[in-house]
Image 1 (cartoon, rainbow, N blue to C red):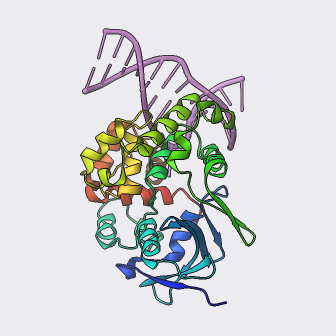
Image 2: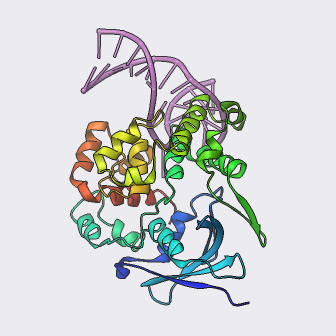
Image 3: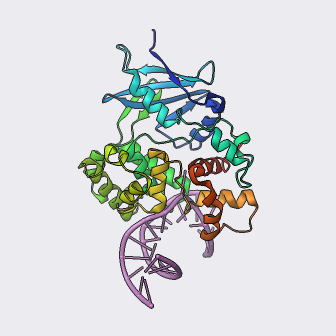
Length: 302
DNA sequence: ATCCAGGCGGCTA
DNA sequence: TAGCCGCATGGA
C-alpha cells in the first residue's frame, strides 16, 4: 500500500533537531495524545473534522519533517491542516538564533543552547487543551497531574484503535460542558477543578471565548481575558499564552518547575523568592518563554 | 508521618 | 494592593 507522505518545512533549520525534541515529548509514560516509537512520533489529529493518524519522522535534512498518513487508508487527506498543526505544535516556524545568542549573556541560561540544541518549544495548538491542562495540573505533583489528564482524555476524548495503538483526541469542550462535577470528582478531580473545567468548557462551547477572539488580542489583553476565568490565575494564563498563543514574553513566575530549575542551576540553598524571580526573569523579555522551556528541559534526565 | 506539588480564590486589613 | 489561608489529594 502506498501511503500519503507530506513534507513539513522547518524554519531556521540549523537550529532544529527532531531528535532533541523527542525527550521532552516523551517525558511522561502517561502521555496518550502522542506516542514515540523509536525515532518516530505518532499522533491523531483532526483534519477538516476527520481524525487522521500521522507518523512523523526526521527528514533527510533538518529543513523539513516527514509526515506519513497511517489512517484513514484510501483517499488522500488535505495536507495544509496537517502542516499547520505540526508547525504550531513543534514551533517549526520559530527562529531560535536570537534566543541562543541571548543565553550566552545570561549566567542562568548559559550552556542551555548547547545542551539542548535544536529543541523547539513544544506547544498546544488546541485552545481547550491549553486552558484546561493548567487547571488540571495546578498545585499537584506532575505524576498525579498526568494521571488526572490521562483519565480526562481517555474518558471524554475521541478514541480510535489503529493497529495495536489506542489514539485519542483531547476532549471537545462541548463534551465537558455537558458534565456535572459528580462525573469528575470520582476520578479524583477536586470539586473546585471540576467546576473550573466545566465552566471553562462552557465558555468555549457557547462561544464566549474563541480562538479568533484570542487571536485578535495582544499579550496583556489576552492575559486579562484568561484570568477572568475562574481557576485561571497568572500562572495558568501565561501557560496558555506560551503554549497556545506562543507569546515569546510569556513568563511563569509562579511555576515550581522554573523555581526548582533556577535553584538547581545556581545551587541555591532554597527556591528563589518572588522578588528574586522577578530579578532573574526581568531581562528575559522576548526570550522568557524559551528560557522557561529550556529550564524545564534541564529538569529532565539527559 | 510530614512536606510538597509546573496555584487559585477569597477574605482581611 | 498585599498578605495570609484553606483547599484537596497523591507522591516521595
